[in-house]
Length: 442
Image (cartoon, rainbow, N blue to C red; front, side):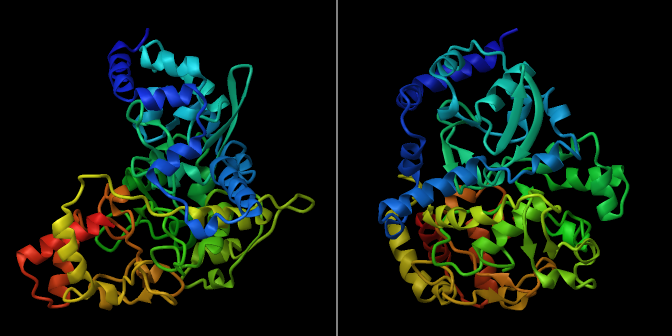
């Protein structure tokens, strides 16, 4: 039965987004939609060779699994339950649909409410067209045979041009709707993950369920710490992958630069087939799981190729080409933001650490928990034991879920209030408001 209710919604939204739908039907390059929201750094656009490298990195970011199907399908068998998931259910756990990957007739059928969004066969069709952002499916004879994941699963979303969850790609934007834990929990064979963490499968599922939308715990597979001291989840927010040009360390707690973290994630989190070296993970007192399993010394199986390392340079270039997106018109008060800019550089002392235009310190941009006025739980899960000064461009694009690594501050006003108290700034209510408007303008 056709989903008439959602079909009607799609039709209404399509009418309001006729330019976007028409562009998709007409085959407008997806990069044009990205650039409408997000400029590429001009200094990284010089020359045909550089453009080719960035295009190669874009393909890797969006579509390369690094051979991780061997894990997600060969070990966990995730493709089996995904074969029964409808588009409605997929959207419900935060998966996104790339409008530009759809055939024109499919776009028109969606707009007319003529697509059964409760039919798992439609999900298979979307996977066959690489239309599910960050998920690569091998579909044969209409059946899903395997799946893998790409960088874009967590670090891309869409602009909802046609409907919520259906639109043009926004690379580098964190998917704060994505419920990674719920998706992984579908796997028929979670025993290898449970054994890695030293728990049973029901306990593992409880850990995964606690993550919730927009969060993931990369470190739990290194240290086994699934919860904070207060019993809440140790998972952190999925971070943006834009606005990183000129920023030295690229994780909340400064594990390393972009290329380091790409290698870390591709090998240890996505479970691709490659090479990774970090002897810091040999510290069994800090990283017991990583040390026991040799995660700091990863090589491809004997006789098998490295499917990751050669792709890191272009992937690095593409990520650094993603400038922070501009805030939407009307989303902040310009006059108030102008006053806030002066405060940012002066009385509020923000620019001491968030140095414009990078909005992080050039150099070793790490600080102790005491300097920030917060606990050191997450910092102590990293090799250096400190927190990185987060770049501030495009804050609006990752406001969902809150601010800081774990979303502890629900609003920018809460962040400003925290620093006003911690640093004894003595800002007035109007000054705090102006500072918030400036942060919203970045």
